[in-house]
Length: 234
Ligand SMILES: Cc1cc2nc3c(=O)[nH]c(=O)nc-3n(C[C@H](O)[C@H](O)[C@H](O)COP(=O)(O)OP(=O)(O)OC[C@H]3O[C@@H](n4cnc5c(N)ncnc54)[C@H](O)[C@@H]3O)c2cc1C
View 1 (cartoon, rainbow, N blue to C red):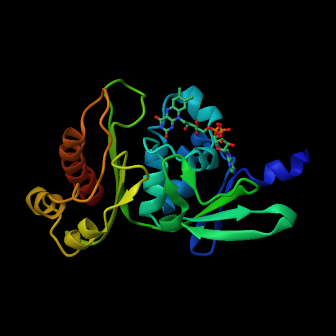
View 2 (cartoon, rainbow, N blue to C red):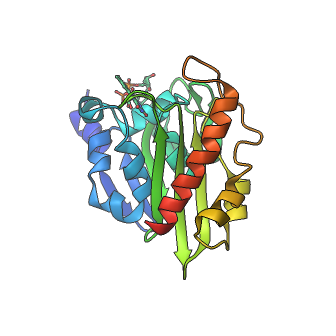
């Protein structure tokens, strides 16, 4: 194996309007990176909640996305920020897949068996507030439900919002109707509560020992309110 090629899959760099995260960059490197904090704060905050320090020091950003566990914490923020996935095929060909088409189903992505995810391009969201609200029963566990929110504020109002849900279906879910409902709203608890009330509509969360689908739908509403309020007001 050419170690130079493996090194090329690690690291974080700027490329114009995008932040580029190599697939083999560890969670801990992503969580502590100043460029991530500046241009894609939502990614850094979500990745910081992954498991414990040992897992974050070994697990990779690209590996977690390729694994596509619906309870994983990297998919929803990548979806919310409109990430693009660069996938290499045999013979050096590459293709780029939008986040909206990357997550196909439970543990299934657009990466084919003979392909490799090489890097993830995140459009810069410089100056946007961000928060990842994760609900767990036991510390450092996978999300029962979590919500990724990034907000651009203007004069106390929400100018734009990006919201996506973790573990509310077989893939991460972008809450586009909530994003639209939030646009132009004052960043107050009451306004946000009303705008996010229908966030669980159309979702299909699992039922397991941690809670049933109805419980998760209720959680999604509460966590979205908290995530958006924190992202909007810091
Ligand atoms: C105890 C424990 C707790 C965890 N808790 C959480 C949590 O709370 N939240 C969370 O989000 N995650 C959690 N994880 C998962 C963790 O985030 C790892 O990132 C994830 O397991 C992937 O590990 P990895 O990067 O070593 O990839 P691997 O385990 O090596 O790979 C995972 C899968 O993706 C494929 N793959 C890997 N890299 C690529 C690539 N570049 N291109 C194409 N396919 C690829 C592999 O073939 C494999 O099928 C946890 C893991 C453990 C062990």
